[in-house]
Amino acid sequence: MIVVMRKDSTREDLEGVQRRIESHGLRVHLSQGVERTVVGVLGQIFDELKSELELLPGVLEVVRISKPYKLASREFKREDTIVKVGDVSIGSEELVVMAGPCAIEDNEQVLSTARLVKAAGAKILRGGAFKPRSSPYSFRGLGVQGLQLLAEARKETGLPVVTEVMAPEDVGMVAEYADILQIGTRNAQNFNLLDEVGKIKKPVLLKRGFSATYEEWLLAAEYVLSGGNSQVILCERGIRTFETATRFTIDLAAIPMIKSLSHLPVIADPSHSTGRANLVPPMTLAAVAAGAHGIIVDVHPNPAVAKCDGAQALTFDVFENMMSQVRAVARAVGKVPAGMTG
Ligand code: PEP
Ligand code: MN
Image (cartoon, rainbow, N blue to C red; front, top):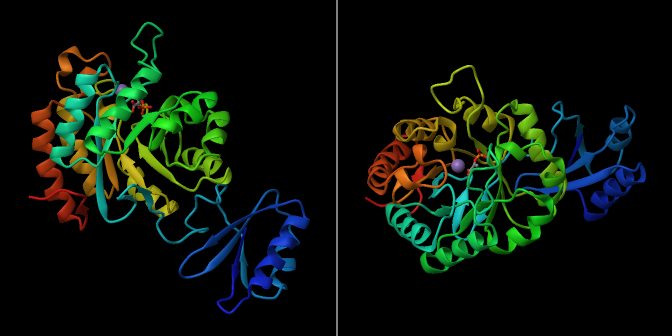
């Protein structure tokens, strides 16, 4: 339920509304937009509450939110949420490219990739230090050492970094290194982890669970938002279907659909969704055309020897080439390709 305040309502009116909600053991979430001040009511809503709140001074209207996710919904917040990372705005008309290796392997690998992707126009460096692998015998990442290498690459290139956190107890430590914390598809319904990233003050990149409906995905976001962290970026990364030729099936309709259901930024991962490097450029362009606010893509100096997901990694040449096409499509759909000239 949301309480929309009148334009001429006072601070006392607002405090009165908040007190009344809290007196029922419910939680309040305030959103002070340019257009309107909205008080979100969180918890088990009872029938009489609507008329009770409508009578309070300063209240314009009380509206029940029809969706099970509240804070993530467009009904709650009409304007797009823009997540700022340094001077990069995710969720705006800028098209933001995040690129880098699937897993951080060594200093040279991450640094050379960071330099190249930056020169080609990427604004955020990606790289996994804690890798969720289907098999326990696969390379599972360098852990803290990987985070240190990532931080060095940021220092040298100035690119902010995004990296995955797998365990609730690691959130504080990963947040010391990362500019954006990634929640992977396999942890997209790890509610303890979602609660934990809800408590921090850094942006969260929330991958879609590979069998999650839009509603389940937005409810996962709701965990983070209701914990007090409003900086959530959603990422379509493919879902499991009957098709086996690709690793997953990229659901591009999710992009416009999520944009209509939610105010949160939405980006796409053409690498993990297809699992095949030759499909990455066309799916990247398609995601941009579908209205994605950004793209996250695997790039490796030598995919043939990559320790993780080499089959889907782009070489430097292919990435550079793709970026000029990304610029063209971005412009064609009214986006500003962030930091990309030429
Ligand atoms: C990744 O981006 O490195 C990753 C493991 O992605 P996903 O969780 O989408 O598989
Ligand atoms: Mn990967």
